[in-house]
Length: 104
Image 1 (cartoon, rainbow, N blue to C red):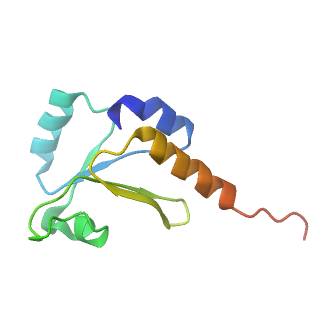
Image 2 (image 1 turned 90 degrees about the horizontal axis):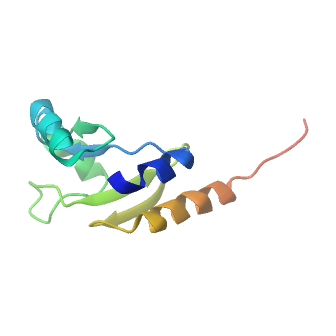
């Protein structure tokens, strides 16, 4: 996602990483890998658990990309490192599904 940040932001999307490590560890990771987005601390792994991003043992995160639409719906979820084009297609498809009603 790092290398597709401009495309994601052009699609009105802001990525975040989520990990159970502490904030200091996150700062080092961001610096080491040049991430242009924030990493959020998931103390206790509640967020990762809610989005189905834990390994079967339940004590470690399995890298997972989840896109949550502005309406709170999960519009994309894939374990691993999906191609950013797949993520962008899901975002476009979700935008196409919105119904616009004109008038009173």
